[in-house]
Amino acid sequence: MGAPPAKQDSVPGDWRTRSLGLGVLLLVCAGALLWARARDPLTREWFQLRAEDGRRFECVLVRAKAPDAPGAPVLIYCHGAGGSLTAGGNDIRQLVRTGCQVLALEYDQQSFERFAGQVAAAQAWLLRQPWADTNRIVWVGMSLGAQYFLSLALRTNSIKPALLARIVGGLPSAIPGEEAASGTPVRLDFPVLLFQAENDQVFELADGRQVAERLRALGGRVELIVMPGLSHNLEGDRAQAYRLVGERILACLGRIHPAPRNRRPPRPKPPGGGQPPVSPGQA
Image 1 (tube, rainbow, N blue to C red):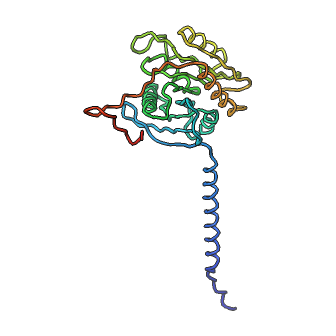
Image 2: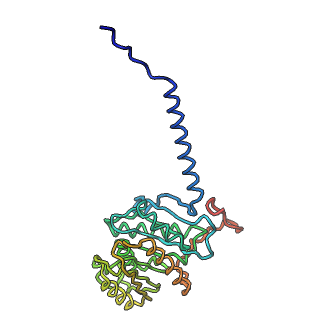
Image 3: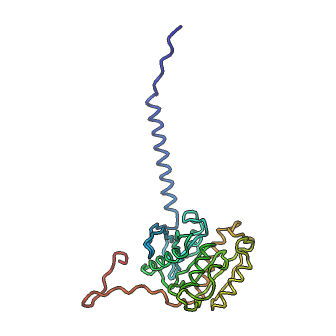
């Protein structure tokens, strides 16, 4: 019986070929990613804001790369229950495609009080941005976000939007009446757009009509928009539904002249007069 054949070592050339192929594949993938980013008409800026309670929360600002039209509104957007900023990326994209700018919040879905503080921090941040038209700040919420935004509008007179847009929302049962937390009667001196899905099984169309009646009793200018054939999650044509939201927001703002309630904080004057200092973010 002869000796078993000797085990052959791997050929070094095979590893060099594989490494070269892997390197080429990585370069192709990197090039494709850079090409896709260059063709993407939108910019995304991820950052954190701090609420009054000291807790930080994630935000993303999505805008068109092309210069925004004068007076382009800024939407403070909150998704529905169980959603996230990353999962709602296409919804945000559809809003921006209509000509809006979107500041989306990763808000606290378990605490209305923390949500209110996060919206206040986001609105205060927008008031400091030179590019933002502070009188065209719009609150846009879907489902739970819609519930929270309406609750906030009914609880406080300290911060208000130029327009409130609610997507598939109902009547917040946690808000008992028409007085703010301070006891001051609430008057809705801004328009409200209610987008209700025809086949919504969570907040039925009758709920939307009830919300409209109640808000009109508070002085609100309310428009109920029924989205035919859609369910609560907007199955069927979700992208088209979000484009409709953006288009109706622009149309509504074009018909009104929001009161100048949101004013930027005054810039301090230096001692002895002269021009106030310019911060790096305003230069």
